[in-house]
Amino acid sequence: MTKRPDILCIGSVLWDVIGRTPAHMGAGADVPGRITRLPGGVAMNIAMTLGRFGMRPALLTAIGRDPEGDELVADCARMGLVTDHIYRSDDLPTDRYMAVEGGNGLIAAIADAHSLEAAGDKILRPLIDGTLGGPGAPWAGPIALDGNLTAGLLADIARSDSFAAADLRIAPASPGKAERLLPLLPVRNATLYVNLEEAGLLCHRRFDAAPDAAKALIERGAARVLVTNGGQTTADGNAEGIVAADPRPVLVTRVTGAGDTFMAAHIVAETHGAGREDALRDALDAAAHFVSGDIGS
Image (cartoon, rainbow, N blue to C red; front, side, top):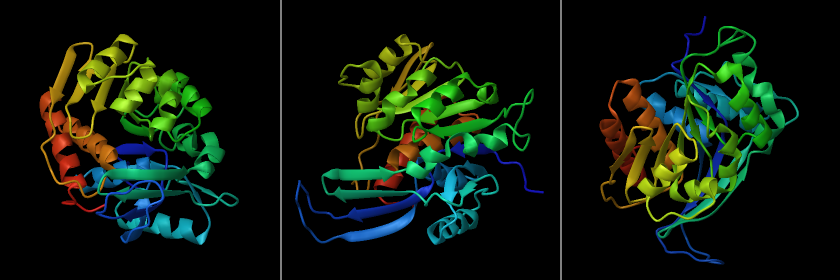
């Protein structure tokens, strides 16, 4: 039998197609660079980082039964990720994400997660049918959940007994999907990981610094939040107060996946018993290694 996973990663697992160039770019720029295709998606990026730190993540997602999907599932398995619980669709194609990054950061990105959205609650069946959890015996370990699910499904998760015993860690996936997380804001066993822009969208106001955003989210009813702000101060807020730390300066060579790496490293640190200050520092160091290109994708 398959060994029980340490953590569930629920959300997008897809192919990342990313073009990178050291040149600064604006609208309409046409420059030389490199184009790569690699496994990605918020849930996948988190799972890969968890795996690098020695955890055994299981993926709950939707992947097509097309050649791209077969290749993606095989790559996941080679990385040591548990793929047994993935919903494989006969009629939905494997999702994709496309981004362009320049020397001045992310220029543009398009996430095509329509198959994940169309699959809906089918990806959650293992939490209901007794495979990983069921009525009266919900999954009691950590869950990393991303906001690429539909607003309706995220609202259902906020009310679901299947998630009531979990250590629920949530990422919005992108600023454009941040407000999907509003139903999850008051969930007492949830920790939200957002950037400064996403925090502003959830609070319907602008913030200049992460500690202010974390404080505002707690005042809005969140149990716990972590707010990042690129190379500026990052904050961890809960009812006991705000803990803040500054990332160390590094030369940024990539940005796609940095927030997912931060979240995964923070989960690992706390799983190993680190306190809030140490866990925050460990997560910032992992993100710095990632954006500088010191660790692989």
